Length: 378
Image (tube, rainbow, N blue to C red):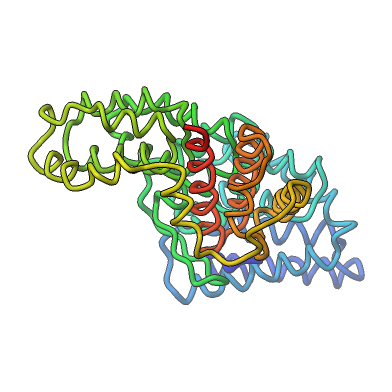
């Protein structure tokens, strides 16, 4: 279990521990139901804003609970499901119980428990102070739930993360995620339906900057018109630079054509200067240019079409991982452009199931591959 900064009153903790001890001496030993209930009451007693010493105690208690759950998993999972159902149905449920028990079930249970964890997610308040202090656990639960393609997850990401600048540190990869990259992983792991969901919100001036940043990672030519329309409302450098990144990195020839037809006289001076400098690169964007930029990536550069298909299927099975195939083998294959793009977009989404800097690098390469394929034949 990941380390989670949580809070609990030590007096309450010791009283609850004493209750379990009394139950053990009175009846011989605490039953799994009694011990599980005690751990959940520990969670319920945790409040935000306590001292570092109290936080350390809470972390130990929460880790101990997960160890207990994990060591008695077959008998504990039905108990946790029952406890979580009861919590969801409370008039005022504990946000931390919903989060922590839901996350354990999401990580360790079958379909019933995973669905229940998702329901718990939708019941909790993502803006509660105690959730704010357990932000990484919330992110991990939402990231897991996004794989289910439940449209309610997109709405929850909107509410909890789309405007947040809170950062998350992934210690296994020494990776710090800012607000944008957090959303890249969440919306990206949901899949292709995230793009139209985000594009529909572009008109909201408070969200425009973040959504443009996300579409640079997750977009396609389908959003060219909506992204282009943003410039009419905000013809400034911050917007122009993000729109340009989208058009040139993921929008294919349609994006290049938009940039070449753009009337820069309606933009601010900084934007006009920027576009003047990069105009030759925009004009020269082509399949060959992108192919050359990918040529230094190691791997097998020449493969039969059947082997390219096998390699891409392996990438899909391995959540985007591949260290054997040069992008050139894919770009130079005789396989259908449309089928390659469709497969690579699956690779992009699945890569974002992996919380690592390598996953982000893989997505960048995949986006370059897809963009190059859109130019192939133009």
